[in-house]
Image (cartoon, rainbow, N blue to C red; front, side, top):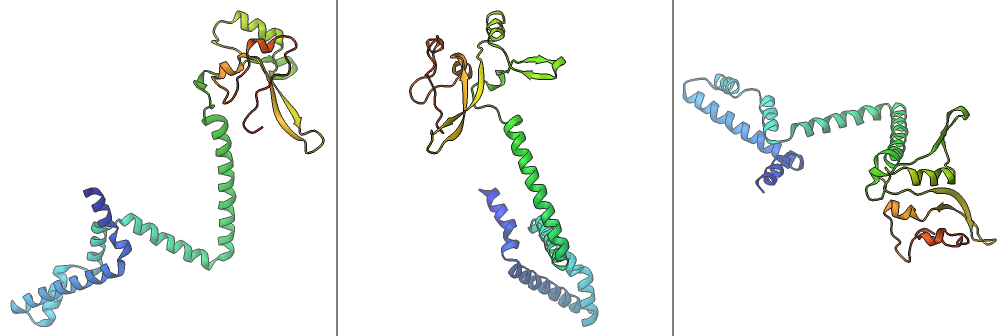
Length: 230
């Protein structure tokens, strides 16, 4: 609570600037008057007493700046003053201002798009438990210029049986299906997977069930797991 009260106290100059400046001027004038009267009582003339009081008190502007540094947040005042100066400069050169604003808008849009892509692809983890343990295995054919090639069913079964480093394995292939018939057809993503796919990802069905080993037997081709979007 004392910390909050201190912050509010230091923010007062921004909300009551004119009133505080007037009170500060009155207080400084009162100090100068008292110092002048004391010098006159000490035997100085009125003119000498005023000059001596001002020398002793210091510059009025310097005193105000020191008070602002102590009572307010000087860096906020500096930022506001710089912003006002920048806005006045831009208003005097409107053509240049429009060019600058357009350039900033294009740069911000490009940065937002790039960050969204990087965040989605590189930074944001996959929405599955222990996503850092998920890996993709693929075939590579350097002589044919194929770096990320598909895996044949025989290669998948051979690796599943021979490689013990994986806790679970699954195969999948992506297709595009058409729903809606002749009315209003719509293309949707379709993935053919082995029954172990959902167990590997740690995913469960919100309704119904996922695939079982029995669904992979011959003739069981009409089993589907639908997403919420579909």
